[in-house]
Every structure is written in structure tokens, then in C-alpha cells.
Length: 401
Image 1 (tube, rainbow, N blue to C red):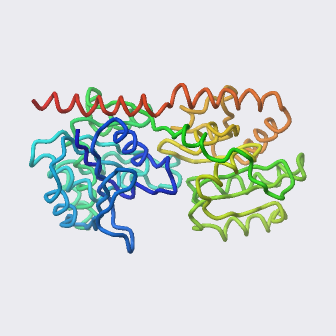
Image 2: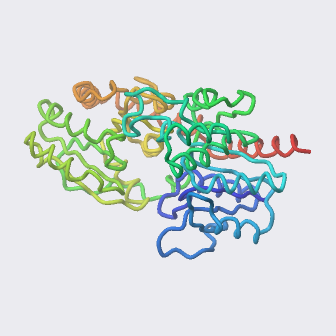
């Protein structure tokens, strides 16, 4: 089978668990031919091959992508087109190509509450009303939006990112929460398959297993992710002095690839008198990240929203217990007291108490580590989930015959 994946970034050799990259590797391993069409990063070549996956780049635009059109027309015709991400400006062009050639079309939105037309605040999507009435799936919807707001580019982008959802033969929801949201988009339940994401456990097991040699006082509490308010870095910053009351030597290590609100994090730590316990690292390579998980006493992810949430699975695979927020969709993969702990949404006191509960109970930590590893291997095995996506492709092809 020849598969065209049309996405935003989609492949990064330094992040093996990127969902499209993980899927593409799994499909190649099963004998399929895969090409990823993605946004053009600055200075990147237009074509190449990574791990047997063809990579093409294209510039997205508000009125289409001639780059993507040329690439698709030039390459061998795929058997299926798989779109990724709700805010993908290449998706409309990919959907048009699939329809023009009568090809099966699959779409993985990857978190509907990332949709800035649906939510008032992407950093805090659960704190406002979801505005399904503002979404433009059809040409009549587009005309209504043009009349309502008189911002042609904004309305056209609305239509171009949402129309492919209705055009797809199947949508792959990565959580039950997402499947419910897609039904509110007007997508029939029969066209939605719920298939979670996964991490490459075998790859992580092949990385160096010794813990990172950090010359820091313990306990060591690890934050992995962008410094965005959606990720809740500020909630952890506010919880730090509360944790330090009971665990005065604790170290808080923040790692990630976005310095967006670094100044705000550092200012918060200075204001509360805990700056000496804050340690900011850059983006680690996969081996170093695995070693950080193995060194940490816990991964702390005080998120306000995740489309899915891969760091908890990475931590579980590496023997690091997880503390996160009781919020969709991470509360589907982290079950409180069983394979991780859940704190209340946006509540530093609850987060600090949950951290304290874990640090004070070594037996609880051991249980969570064991159950976390079992969760990753039993429920989120890549081979089985790639096979389920492969089956979706075949079902779409059968429906079109």
C-alpha cells in the first residue's frame, strides 16, 4: 500500500515518538511505502528520505498550496491520503487531491480543542464556551461566516481547515474525548475510529538506561514540555513553595523546546523565593531525555489540555511515575492511584499535595512504576495500533470499490 501523510511538521529524527513519524515507521516496517508531506521548515530541502520514509515539503498559504499540489501530482499516486492536525493549512489541498482521484481519505485531527475557531483561549479551552456554531464545514457555512465577521482571510481559513473533516471517509480520534467532540462536529459515529497514540518502547529500551547524572539535591521533579500556559508550567511554579515546605531539598527540572514564557517562569520562582530550586534545561536528545526520566522521582505534567499526552507514556516506559491533571484526554491514559496520580485542574495546592503523597510513600511509587510499564506495553503497543490504522485504510478502500 502507498500512503501519503499530509501534515504540519510530522517528522523529526530527534523525536522518535512524534505521532506521524511513529506511524510512518510502523507502516514501512509492515511493507508499505510512505511519503510525508509537511510544512517547509526554514532552510530544509524540498525532498529527502528518513528511515525509509519519503519526505516532501510545501509552503502553506491562505488560498492553497501550489507546492503541495505539484508534489502530489509529481509523485506516484497513493492508495490512501491521511491528513493530520486540526489546524493543518495543507489539509484542504490534500483532501481536494484525494477527491479528484477518488482516493480514500482519512483524517486524524489530533486534539479538537487546539482549534482556535472552536475555543476562546487555546491555553485554557475548558474555561470558556465551545463555539461549534462558528465552524465552517461547507460553502454555505463559509458565506455565513463572511457575512458575520467580514474578515475574508479568517473565514476562508476557517473553511479550509474544517471542510476536510466532513470530506474524510474516516476520522481517527486519539481519545474518547476527541471522538465525542467529533460527533458534535456533525461527524457520524460510524465514520469515527478511536485509536490512541503510542510510544516506541523498544527504541526507548535500546537507549542508555543509566539515570542522568544531575548534581542536584533530591527529590528531583521533572517537567517535560513547552513553556505554554496550556501545559500548566505556571501551576507547577505556584506549587513549588508548597512542595518545598515538606521537601525542602526538592529540585524542579524543566526541559523542553520552547522558551516562550521562560521569563514568566523565572519571575514566578524569584517572587516566591524558590529560584534556587528551579533548573531549566534545553531540548534534550532522545537518549538524554530517557536518562532524565530514569533519574526523576516523578514527571509532573499539570496540563490544562492535551490532545493526547505523550510524555506520560514516555515516562511510564522509562520507569518514572506520573503526576498530571484530571482533565481530558490524559485522564484516559492515567488512572488515579493505579498507574499515576491526578491533581485537580489549575490548583497548585492540589498539585503540591499530590506530589507530597507520592514522595512520602515509596510503596505507592513502586506500584505506579510497575503499573505504568504494564499500561504502555499492554494498552499502547505500537505494532497493534499501527495494524488498526492499516485496517482503517483497507476499510476505506473497500468502501470505495
